[in-house]
Image 1 (cartoon, chains in turn blue, purple):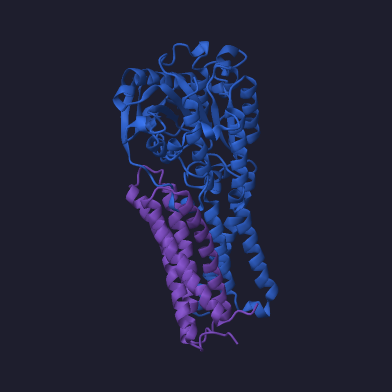
Image 2: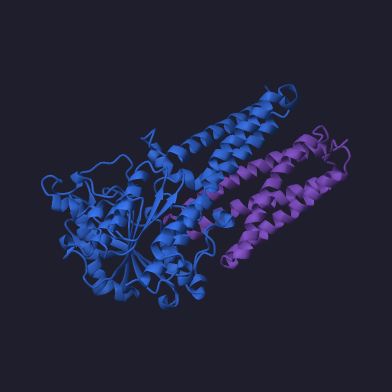
Length: 426
Length: 144
């Protein structure tokens, strides 16, 4: 075999490997990590967000294979056309997430109509809409990202030192006067994912989203909380700082968030020009559960002394949220102390006085199953809480990582409108 | 429909236009904040341009006489275009995912995105121009 032929064989093998990867990608799009478990629940986090680019990759290698096997078009036409069919089928399967975008938008509109009335769009004045994404999805932004607005960032600000841990936050603020922007200095307390035992602020708590919201006039506090060092989880988040690990339970984590709210009231709100009359708790995965406990439990007797009494919670934004704490992560289990368990169960905490809730959920999430989140939404609504569940077909866990993907853009489009609409609800 | 020299010429001319438009609109995307009309047109042009680029690669594959030296060069450029497309995708994926990473500078993140995006359309514009330029060379094409 001459060098050229060897090179062609290598290219052919690599192309086939890409098509096999494309098939695996498509499988995870449809089923997430629920079936195979193991490492697939981590890989799933990247699949839907990169599936459009996988379409491009599969089509490119299909054309490459067609060029490499051009001579077979006459001699073995069946083989040649089989490659076209296989390549296009795999590409098509990877395109389902993109093709489902109109459904996502229709579903989100219906959720908003239920929560804010049929004319909810008219409640947003044109001068405010000018700051928002003009459409739920632009194919161009998918590749070039959403242009960033000028913001200020301050990182690693200490807010708690004790129990052998140190807790810091990063804060994202608008450069322009917040009062001229839709956010009006509203506070967003952003809680990171990581199964209550891993993760941290920054990279894995979606910096892009924090930056985007700061550009809209929100003051986003991306905060740390003490992490449970005696619990192990298969899909632990990376970049966990050692200085936050301790012999904690979920009660301690909520207490740490409470400490932050008190410091925010006494000091940080004034320092960063934040508005205590409009506060949101946003979180992802385990952070979503904590955001739910803080946001829905703010007016709940059990947590009476935990949080600052001088903040007004306007909304809760849990993304891919578990509905309750695993019993073993509390100091006592449900049978011994049901009141304790209930104080960390989102449905039990909910009441008609609670602020609206906006939830994000991928239908192929292998860690937090869609069925459970749909039930949670129904339960919250039955308790009188206005709840919007944004369902993203074929999306997995943590699929808001790429802000400009078809998932990220739709999410941001409705998130910024939810934040504005709920600011004025008393 | 029989595809002749005239049709390929039109295809190449349209491709030159759409590829160059994509490059210009890609730069405008960062200068003017998202405008619904511009972004909608831009989105359509990207899809259109991408499909036509693929059609041109495939068309060249079937209609080029690879035994002629210019034909062999255009065929090689077709391989190069697929290579550029694959590399662009990796650059775009890398850039878009790294936008969240606080261990990379924004300059690197946006460089990856722009390099990925612009290299594809720049190569596309050059490829369509060279294909069009070679149209008058009878040895290169198998139209009849």
